[in-house]
Image (cartoon, rainbow, N blue to C red; front, top):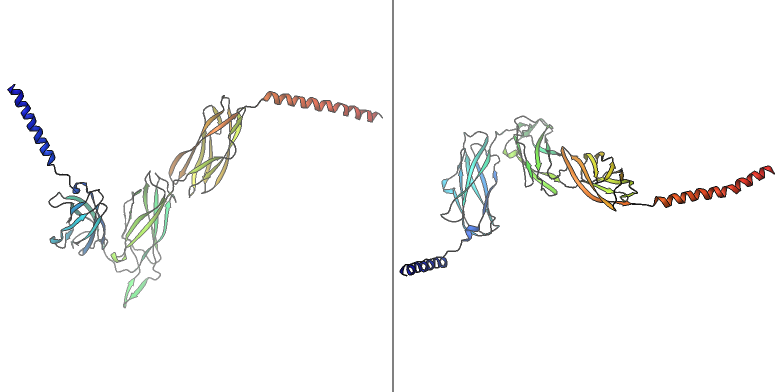
Length: 410
């Protein structure tokens, strides 16, 4: 009995301790529900010039559902970058509510012995004082050489292949960059300069839904007055990309950072394909008939290798696949397909599939499933009526023949 009593007393003690711990439990702080993202918005000059300072703008945003009460940013650059002062390494931001953001500018120095290329900066953040630091790393371009040439590059042409993409497509986006100078030299403040131009580098950045898979263009040649170069990039369109116009960022480094350019490059995505519409009722009479369809290209640009396939259980179709070929946008083409069946049913479903190519991309789309009506007519009654018509014509024709003969005798 004493053992049982001791066990019960121990159980009650444990229960009280558990209840006491629960009653004094500290609720989770709002900081635990805060989620941060850090990004480098831009830096000036672009690219960062060797032996000069570069200002880097960093954005931190709270994308969570809880408030952060003591947000801080810390910059830790790697060679060839260094902070203008270690006192500026940490910036206290303070409170960031959900969907709020803050931007802070760090100043870095690019070592005078740095080489052309890229350098890395590490950016840390914490959401409350004394908490953990979280790191993100970013690459910054290190400056190319500067030239005294005064030629100016302009974007004069944008093309894509295919012209309008579909979700899941791959293709190319191309640009023509032209030196707009018309003379071989220009005089500024009494000093003569050549009007050559350079495209030291050109970078095309992707967006959500479109990936750029080509490396950045890097060049060192001279583009004379009125001359141009073409640059192409491979792009991948996401399978779930929505219809619309997307804008890619093209950043170009010219003669020097003061001659840099940034352009927004439109890329169109449209999921419209080929429609196949019956142009007369889909009906077979006594198991035979001809099906007629209008094939229309609804896509904004030309599609190639367009073919239409029909399939239905128990129905012989001729041809099984109708090759249309190339179709311009909004072009309409009419096809006829003979059908024959001996099945006993009122209707049968027909699956219509279209194959086509958009640029180099092959597509196969099931455009519709339509019912083929099967009608049976009484061929016996029709035959009897035909026989009766022949007999009647023959019967009516006999008196006429006799009358004509009699006229001839008279």
